[in-house]
Length: 604
Image 1 (cartoon, helix red, strand yellow):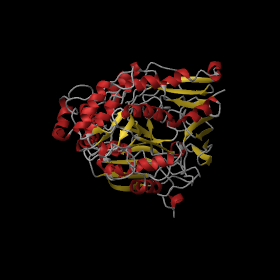
Image 2 (image 1 turned 60 degrees about the vertical axis):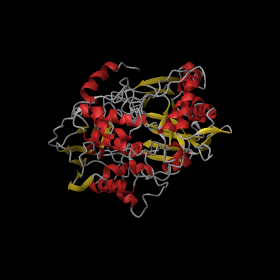
Image 3 (image 1 turned 60 degrees about the horizontal axis):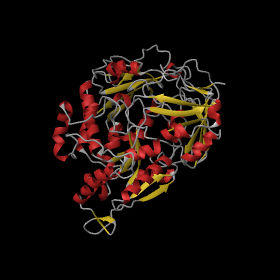
Image 4 (image 1 turned 90 degrees about the vertical axis):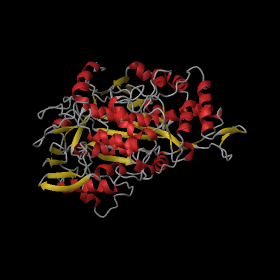
């Protein structure tokens, strides 16, 4: 089940991934829309190319999750909702194919229409679209959902909504959005918002975390739940969209269940004990050494490796620059120098995993090595005076030594940078000129055993610099609350990035996130250069401009030294029951939302 998709990927890169961003020339309603070029699938496509349209229906899949949940509203800032709730029970106007960089096909909407400049977009609902209670999906439900999410929903919805000049009903089943800013991605983003039933929320406070089950249009409904213990989804036999080409070969399980456990180690034990049926393993060494169990040897459990060609994204320890301790780039560089990745990787992974070199590494969008050139240099040059060293000249992460925990050469460089920034060791502890200790707290979520292992090794090295951080472990609800409010100094940070980055980058790195709660800008960066690069990305009309803007953004982020990155994997490792199967055709994004459990199936 490991097809050769390198050969398949090359023409995709040339013709689809970053095809020339010329106008798609939509002059009438279409079945789909792509960020660049045209959708790969024709109007009469039978199914998504990575789905098996003949997959049998039935059976169940059971996942284990660390932590818990206390809300059934995943669309607001407060509370912690269970993973899968929105994914399985609520739909959007358009559905995304994970075999293309950024292409949407009709789901609740039967068609999409836009002009050459993409200054507006219009969707026409399918008359047969229904909520799970049998009531029709109306334009009123759509308009209420968009306005509610864009004004009082989670901040991730606000940026795009602020660029909507006008929303209007243009027919019995049609709604149009007119934009107030040039942004070619908006026509797609407007197709991706969850559609909720307006009547369900009459007289209720949408912003309050609650355990009311949302009425959605999706293939599953909530069959039962107990906060902190489990949530179960049952396939709706009356699901309105079961025969859509987009859905053929998807939504095959009768039941999808998530059981919650105390931490990652207990999740692993639950899987090996037969309580759950599928487990993603992120630790390469554990994958090799700890799955030699009778169920694997007998074939009852299968170990599958799913390749992908998506960017590495960023995972590691993020430094909160709202804390003056981390406001100086020299201090952040010193923290990077003290982190001996090679030793940690060898200790935890057997040295097998590649390091994250930049936010978009492992893709054509990555910044590359050496000085910025051409269009990338042109984009960055107006901001040169305010950019950290290395942004334009070239920056690479420090290299360590796999044979010893402390790399002496890097620690000497770290000490020199800390002294330049006003810190020196007195009485065995790093202090500033006023005698205040270099003090900070590392906040980790309970159950994050791998992150805890990394931190345990790292803090031992920090002690040699006279730095003694405090480590605080909190439950998942507290972790979300503290990170939403940026109430931490250092925390474990993960951001997945796609082959078509756009407006969401402002939520990740935009200046509003310095003070507004709930953004993904945990580091508190305030970079006009980053925002300018994001603007250049979403306004790009051609391949070269888009790639250059993304590579320039990658330089700003990486040389900003905000995150101490760890490793990524080009392969997802999934251990699962032998009764669970997936198609031979692996999508471009590999194991990404939309793959498991969507196109998997159960078979005796």
